Every structure is written in structure tokens, then in C-alpha cells.
Amino acid sequence: MGSSLRWRWVLLRFSTSTTHNAAAQLTPLDRLPGIVHVLQMREGKPSQTAQAVAFARAIESLQAPEKRLFEDPYAERFLGRDGLWMVRRLRGRASRRAILYCIDQIGPGLLPYAVARTAFIDEALTAALRRGTPQILILGAGYDTRALRIPGIENALVYEVDHPDTQAFKRTRLGADIEAIRERVRFVGVDFDRQDLGEQLRSAGFRFDSPSFVIWEGVTQYLPADAVDATLRVLATMKRGSEVVLTYMDRALIDGTRSFPGGRRLLFAVRFVGEPFRFGLDPTETAGFLRARGFELLEDIGGEKLSARYFAPLDRTDRATETERLALARLAGPESE
Ligand SMILES: C[S@@+](CC[C@H](N)C(=O)[O-])C[C@H]1O[C@@H](n2cnc3c(N)ncnc32)[C@H](O)[C@@H]1O
Image (cartoon, rainbow, N blue to C red):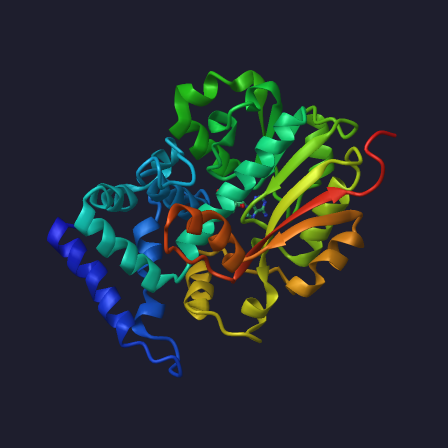
């Protein structure tokens, strides 16, 4: 698609969104979610939602150093042709503002949430590394590049779990950079829906008797409730005191009992790429849900507090969506047994 055509294409979607009537059924924009097209991966069949998160990190990495929450210099490598086209335009000041405005119209608060959640997890991981945690387990790792970019992680062994297709694409795109750290990163191909995570981890050398920090970022919503349960059952057999940071959708979005800005459009977009939301929690029940599975909730945080914590100190007006939340939990019981 030529440059001017692409612009017209993006603006057409934007202009359609401004005529959106909240009371109406799906708008043309809902039916043709522009953000999905922009992020669409044509190279193979790895996760498109993983690519969407990489896109968010690539955008954040373009912020001026004093304004950004983190820098992920590898994120751009996972983008398709259209994503790269957008990133190039994001380097221009005027076009940047217009594109970010369009993105927020299409998915209100999604971009700020994605980057604030990354910042939250980076901090929790850094704290775990400072405590000397020797094992980092990243479930549904997608295009998470923490094994390459977080200082101190070189002293830990990282286990990355995901669908083999996504892992293969990731390894191709990271090339020599990932090969250079292969002795401290293990790729474990697992389908949480169908395979036994515990068995696969054990055969990859994961030590359940060693303190671990687990990252489960942007994944639970794509799983059936019994797969979430099965995964937590496996994690509950880790060394006491191990920590898990996970994200979850507010169940009210999925069951439609509460309306969120852009909520229906988001549900449609993920269905459209074949990765529909299946699992969510009522935030008032999160502590009890985790307690029943052996975990003590340390912190549960949503968009408003994330925005206050991460964007306000940088004088940024970004507002993260309330559709998804983060929970940091510790495996209950004495740390050493
Ligand atoms: C939105 S992406 C998040 C990726 C990464 N955690 C991040 O935040 O950048 C969701 C990830 O979950 C993985 N995933 C979804 N369902 C899965 C399943 N049943 N088994 C294994 N991985 C799954 C996808 O392959 C994808 O990498």
C-alpha cells in the first residue's frame, strides 16, 4: 500500500470512530479494527497479540530518554511491514501526535496500560534479581526481551515458555543476540491448554526446589479457566517465597456486566485475530482466588494507579485502561523449608 493510501486508510478508520454512537451496535470501525491491521503479521503464524505488545514497547522506546519508562531496543524486530511503517512515522513529531491520537481512539488506554505494565514487571523483576533469585520463569513469553535487557538478569537462569511457533519467530528475529546468551536462556515449547507445564519444565531442567520469579504477562485472558488453574497448581509446587506477577482481565469486560471505553472493540479485535479473551477475574475476588491456590496477594493494581505511579511523575498525561490489571503474589509459607 502506498504511503498516502495508508494515511487515508488510517484516517478513514479514525474519522469513522468519531461518529461512533455509544448506544449503537458495532460501528464500521469495530468491524475493521485498524489497530489489528496495522499490527498484522504476515510472516507466519506466531501470536499476533504478542506482536501488538512489542509494537507498544517499540513506541515507548521512541520517547525521549527523560520521558520514557523503559527502552526495549529489540521490540521493533518483531514488527511486520505495516508496524515498521507506523514506527517510522512515529519518529516525526507531528505525525507522532496524530498516530498516538488515532491509536488511543481505536483502543482507549491500551498503549499506556501495556507500557506501564511492562514497567511494573521490570521493577518487580529487578527487585527479585537484587534478592538473588536464581530462576526466572516467563510464561507465554512472546516477544519479552527481558533476558537481554534487564540489568542483573545475567546472574539468573531464564526459562521462556510459549507456543513453539512464537518462539521460533522470536529466535529468528533475535538472531545472534539471543544465541550469545543461550547458556542462560531455555526455551520450553508448551501449549497451556493441552500440555503438562510441570513435566515440560522439569525436563528442561527447571528446579522446583529453587527460588523463582514468575512472569505471566498478558496471557491468562487467552486461556480457559481450567488451564489457568492447572498452571497455578504447578506454580504452587515451587519453592515457598517464590513470586508470581500475572495480569488478568476484569471479568466484567468479558461478561459484559460493565462497559469500558473501547471495550467492545477490543473484544472484537482479539476475536478477529483468533485469540479471544476467555478468562477474567473480579478484582474484588483476586486476593481470595490466589489464596485458595496457595498464593498471598502482595499488590493488585489497575490503570488509574498505574498512570499515577508511572506517568504523572514524568509529566505525561497518558491514561491506562482499567480493562486489565496486574497482581503480584508470593507463594505462601516460610521461605526456607
Ligand atoms: C499478548 S501475548 C503476551 C506476550 C508477552 N508475555 C508480553 O507481554 O509481551 C500472549 C502470549 O501468550 C501466548 N499464549 C497464548 N495462549 C497460549 C497457550 N495456550 N499456550 C502457550 N502460550 C500461549 C502467546 O503465544 C503469546 O506469546
